[in-house]
Length: 282
Ligand code: 7PJ
Image (cartoon, rainbow, N blue to C red; front, side):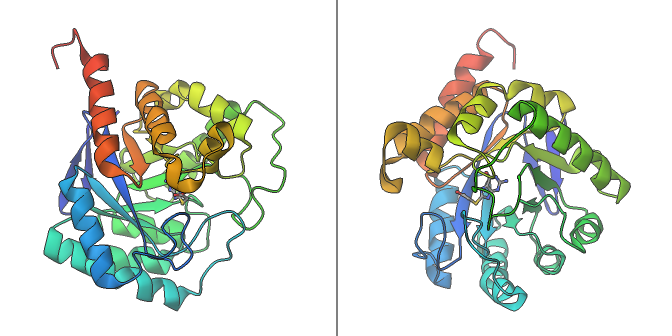
């Protein structure tokens, strides 16, 4: 696995697990309810996450919550670009862009974004080309269907971990063919994207083989409904469950965990890593 990712002006050290902080700039985001919609508030929230130890700030302007419909391009650009600019210029942050649109990737990259995070794995027209042009690392994620329909009785013909591995293998090849360097890819099993709770639990438990692609693995389970379903907790009470999942993801080989609650997750991940490293010289 590459131990360093070149992210534009930034270098991301992945010799130990890192935390990606979620910055939603959508009015109807998964769990922030649009509270970070105002530009100043978004910048302040990012600043707090960086102080808590986030290595990456993941900016999302399109809600991908189950059932959400895509926002118009101009609206997405208007939401995310001012935030990218301020985080890059004022905080010198390593910014990742959670987007499926080539135009957004291109504009964000030209403003100093350092990573592309596409839940649709560059399958929208123009995305592959824009990502390749940017030269930035890309997180490719498994998703069955689209956010509008993905939670409508997801069904798999093969065990979930096989379906995910097969999908990612194909996407790696397609990205490489389009000029995205293999060592610039990050893989994500896509928890909650076209998966029932049993799929999510099994996928986490059997995630280790995904590391055998030799690429960094990213896991995002923060506040997701798999926690809500298992523990019967509303979204604002899912942190303990989320810490357990982040811990397990790192134990199963994830090198980036994408979360809302950065401070507590950094501690959980660092504690887990200390145990995993005992006895090594690292
Ligand atoms: C993920 C994401 C994820 C990656 C979202 C939410 C839903 N990007 N964007 N992985 N989830 N790479 O945060 O609850 O799991 S949006």
